[in-house]
Length: 291
Image (cartoon, rainbow, N blue to C red; front, top):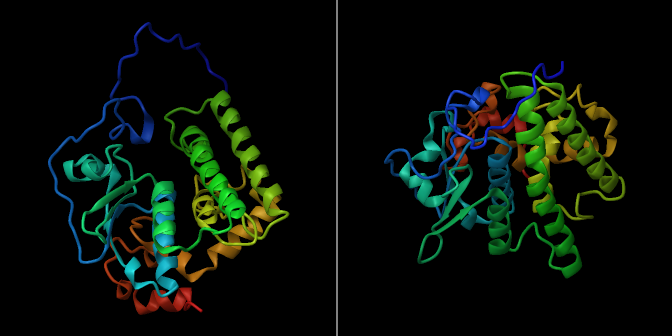
């Protein structure tokens, strides 16, 4: 399908609140809160306000990985933010993340609560706080950080680019779908070449770079994003597929996927998480036990 008419941009752009496809009701050209609403606060050191989108999954996986190592100080409350209902525009949420995007973390482990927003920043904050999933060797650390920031810069082309025009846009047009499909496949090729020579993205060690990248690209090749696996020929990226399946098998990753999840299989949904016991016995049996 090709564009039938050429779009000529106006001299000054104005917002059409009805234009924008599936997410038109929550997209707007201004920031700030739309309503007053305080955020709930639980008993644990970390208060997470999120939803199990790929960006949200990054943080719950990280927290579950830390807990799997026996780090009790990483205990957290995960509160559900329904972005379709506009929860991210409540005054309390905007105080934690002025960008009104999930996830948002409030670190209450010190004397003064510290807000951390942007998923990559949250991963790095937790890695540095607990000294885990980030190499200590300077060269290895630089490699892991490079791949973490690669993900932060690349994934918008996958999500806001390919995902939007392929799955969510109100009309399908050839040019944007081709443009972002090409870029998504280029990114998968970048990963495949790297993973052909390394067990994990940044080398021999599992790091926050893997957690960040798997949440988007791993789930993409596993068929969980945009129903696009066949369209993108994901099976051809054999090294990415090997890596994606290996990380997917980690019990902490499987638990992290469940938290703040409100869609998909009912047995994989845990709308809020306030204690390890919130993962019921049946689910624990399905995902195994940590070594």
